[in-house]
Length: 304
Image (cartoon, rainbow, N blue to C red; front, side, top):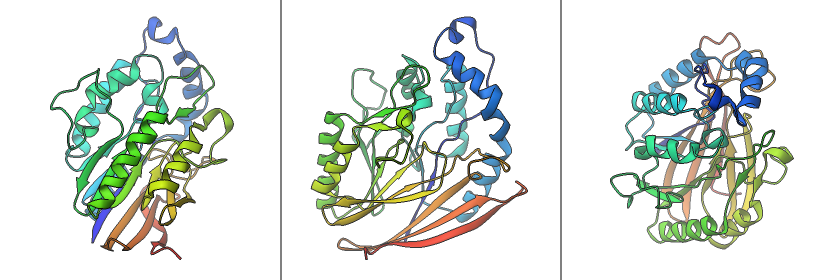
């Protein structure tokens, strides 16, 4: 059995001091939102509790589906790199970016440069190349093929939309087809939920139709995402049957807010091609915020 852990929307805080130049952009709206709302419910100790409990489970791999930072300032991006280095070895930790990691123009490239070891695919160059497309990437780990997609783009103020391009759809389909031929359990990682109605209009994924059509043509065994800060399970049609699409609450959400408390998913994968077994276990910060408890367990595969 192989165990994959999944967290998302880390939103490392607190916000560092920002220069006037950094604030003279979309960041000003995010800065105000942080101080009025987000900072009241995102607590560093929540993330600490989640990671400490997760480590006790000893998963073989950790998947992080975006939003490591808040406003994507240079200081935040470097701080997130340091956090990644403390959290896990890049061989055992895979990352895809979220909309907050590409908050303003130029932020995406800076973040990918700093976080490159965690988004480098099996055939990626040893060093970051800004002229080379990073996504989608494929990482083979045990029986898994982790396929990382990016929906992260810089957007105007009051928008948190994502984009799944035709090129990514084509290239992801090729990787999924290749991984199936290799007999691997295929996990697609993306930040925005590729499900209609799963996110508000201004937070939706543009290109949902392309993503859905890709799954119908080539299939997958599991899709994981973040962005909505809620625990969710959807199903999409795939070539070989329905594909589970799992979201998870923000890994930094403290108790007492409108959104679910911080948590993580564990996916236990066993079986063989054509007879895969997938058990999902969900863990969540308790009501007092000083520990983590299991809140759910469900067999997602075999498909019913």
